[in-house]
Amino acid sequence: MGLLALLACNDTDTPKYELQAVPELAPLTQPALVLNQSASGFIAETFSWSPGDYGFSAAPVYVLEIDNLKDFPDPIQLAESNTDYVSIMVARLNMATLILGGEPGEPCNLYLRVVAKLTADHTVASSPRDITVTAYNEPVVYPKLYLPGNYQGWDIAAAPVLQSYRMNNRYEGYVNFVVSGDPNAAVEFKVTTLPDWGQGDKYGDGGPGRLKLDGENISYSPQGYYLMQVDLDKLTYTLTPAEPVP
Image (cartoon, rainbow, N blue to C red; front, side):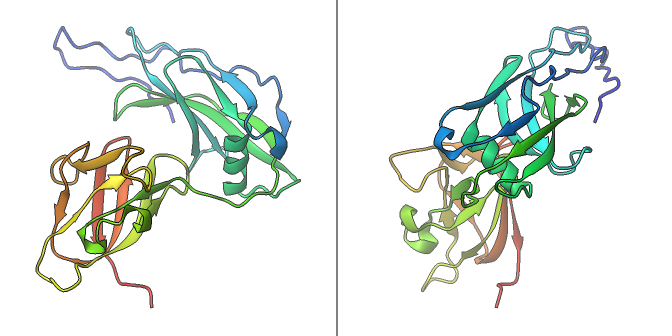
């Protein structure tokens, strides 16, 4: 969880990473929240934290995480912030609580922490704080990505989807990348955030295994049935051959 000490190379232009203090969540003003569907568009709570001290003038991206286990083995990301606070909407917190196993109308014991992302590879996490959330009933809907391509006629409205099961910008799903009538053709596709060419972000080829915003079509061979995983934070993707489910 912690980054005890990170020393940069001897390059005098490179800052020296020496952890002096981790960021810490402020005491919660409402450690027990009862959510109401009629207030879904309102703020459930505003969370704040100390900035931490990393031995140099850092400008981290802070990520507020929630999990149902205190060691955060697979947390949900509630929000990111460039400041030392963030407001979480009722609908977002309710969905996270349901995904983490909360039963509608029943108090669910959860844990919060803030993670400071110093670089893509170096993060520092606060100690956890307890929170109890009572969710309301609604269908669980995971964030989605869409995969329009030549294998399905570039019909974005009917494109296969990848889902982020922990709401953390990491998506996965199975895709049948087969071009009907042309088994030797390369599969071409894009990754989009909405099933509409006129809305959302569209990612294309950023090099092998990488995505680029508004990039050219991704071209992939051979055709087949794949498990696809996408990390939008790192703008990477992997395709792993898989066996179709009977």
